[in-house]
Amino acid sequence: MAPGELHALVGQNGSGKSTLIKILTGYHAPDAGSRMLIDEAEVALPISAAERRRHGLSVVHQSLGLVESRTVTENLRLGRLEATRFGRRVRWSAERQAAAAVLARLGSAVRPTALVGDLSAEDRATVAIGRALQDHRPGRGLIVFDESTRALTRDALTRFYAQLRRVMADGASVLMISHRLEEVLDHADRVSVLRDGELVLAGAGTGDTSEAELTRAMLGRSISVARQQGDAGNPPDSATAVRVRDLEGVDLEIRRGEIVGVTGLVGSGYERIPYLLAGTAAVRSGTLTIGARTFALPETSPVALMKAGVALIPEDRVQQGLALGLSVRQNITVPRLTAVGRAWWTGTAWQTAEVDEFVGALDIRPPDPEVPVGSLSGGNQQKVLLAKWLAGRPELLLLHEPTQAVDVGARQDIVAALRRLAATGSALLVAASDPQELAILCDRVLVIRDGRIAVELTGEIDQDDIVDATFAREFDPSASRRSS
Image 1 (cartoon, helix red, strand yellow):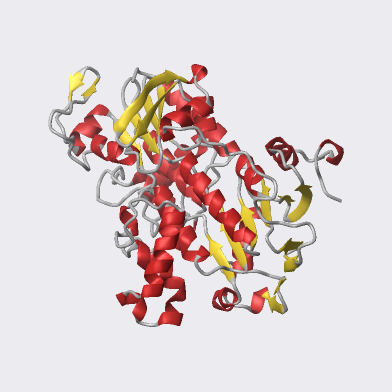
Image 2 (cartoon, rainbow, N blue to C red; image 1 turned 135 degrees about the horizontal axis):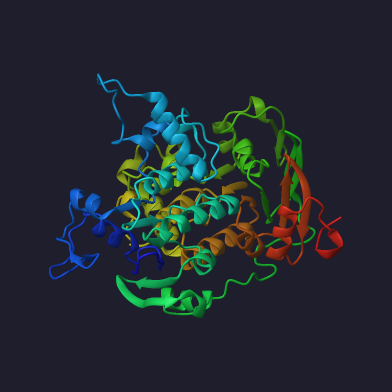
């Protein structure tokens, strides 16, 4: 990598990207004979923390590495806190000002006094990114971002890359690991591809490379992500499966076998809808009707909704969706623990068959149901989370960013699994910010603005229509496929 270069590294989940980063940071020792040079000087491997600091090597990992019980200031200034001149007391007013300056450079309005655990996924990512950028010293350094931008919106990404270019202008190099191929081609100077631990494409110029070429290099084959009409199993005359009324101002219906997407700008309220319907977020008003049963959401517990056939796949799989210390088998079967009692811990024939079915159908790797989920790549963890709820055949499946930070192959597996579920008659609601994902997957897309449904798109949905409807205050329905 040259000084001032933004180099992207892409590959399937499990291809070795995160392992490579752990070698660069000294977490893993490489094979004998490995060499690393920084500024033309050879660095002893495994690299020490002191050597990392000396060479300006900093990393923002997928997990972000934040302490959720501490404030934004404490997380940003950890290891950098300065005491007063005549004592050991920390000058908190100065530290908060320093933290605010870091956040301001990224265009963030996060309060330095806020607890990290109370922040949104986007704001937590911003704090972690800010912490890495503040350590940069002009004229040197390598900053590594391992899927660190996955929670950022389009506007936040624009601010992030603007700040990154300023840092790179001072001589720093950036290694960016990402599954968002469009983002890679838009912002990186060169791109390399890992497959099964080997470099199969090295330093290709992004101006001379396409998404299709990167996909072929990642998978060793070509794939089609085009949406096939009817795959979601949504006959026009299918019965209404779910009816929502006055969900803080939102009314909607979902038919049996239908996949409905919701999207909008950050703050529009679209991302809260799955959690409101699942009972995991405080809701002021609204009713949910599933079949013949109607629930007043402010008075209904998440457990009652789950028993009625409502399942939620949250955005944050690590904190809210999975038990990383438990096995793949235990994670997949835990929602049905009350039905099988203590047999869950010992294993049964039904359990083995169920888990094997979903491990195979979703191509979970390695295909060993006894490995801890925490040892899997991010994409395979997402597949386990999906299997956990698909196995129960829910009446209503709620999803928030279901394909975020997964590679194109895993995304295809997830989309296929959701379509299979819809074909059995389940209703699906997908909240997502990626217009391509929504266009591929959904039968209808609802654009939320100021907490209300502003636009409804149906038929052969185009991602450009979704973008136009999301960002335009005045949307021309005659130029789109908007339903009446």
